[in-house]
Image (cartoon, rainbow, N blue to C red; front, side, top):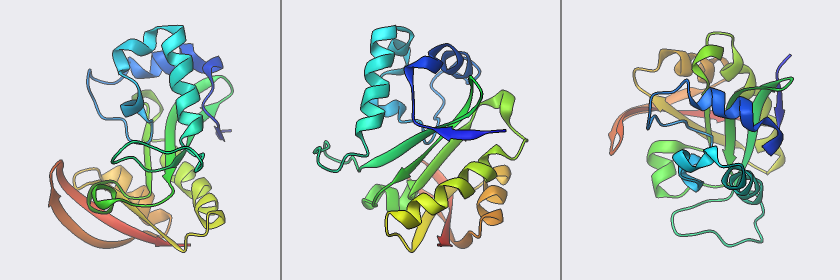
Amino acid sequence: MPELITPTRRLRSSWLAARDEWPPGAHQDGTGLRLAPEAELDSPEVFSAWVKELRQQSDRSIALGDGSVHATYWWIVEGDDYLGAIDLRHYLNAVLLDIGGHIGYSIRPSARRRGLATWALGAVLPEARAFGMDQVLVTCDDDNVGSARSIERNGGVLEDVRTTAVGVKRRYWITL
């Protein structure tokens, strides 16, 4: 049975194995990889520092750098197996409003087609409600049929499909 957990250095080996399933340089939405250069995460010290940074991103008393927003990160796991990640961005900036939305997620390639993205998105929606949000924006690439289905299964209503700086995006709103 999958569960959402706070990122932990305990699952480093499983996380590294999952990372190695992705093509080099692939974007893994919801993981917070932008906070640490991926190539350096092989180091236990760098990995631990990255996990600590992920945990601190939700602390609104800590000022963030330009362009960053506070976010809560979870890992999708079964036992000691890292299956993916999901994050809840506490508010939107201009880039997130256009491209990224409130929630981002990714599932490791070997764990796809099991309903994990749909399940994880559904599990995070009550967290968004607890933050006082009454709706969330969730986006996906226009050609990502699986992600579009996950969003729609969680009540996503398509607002538009637009060309952005990173490609064509489908933008959905989910009322909480």
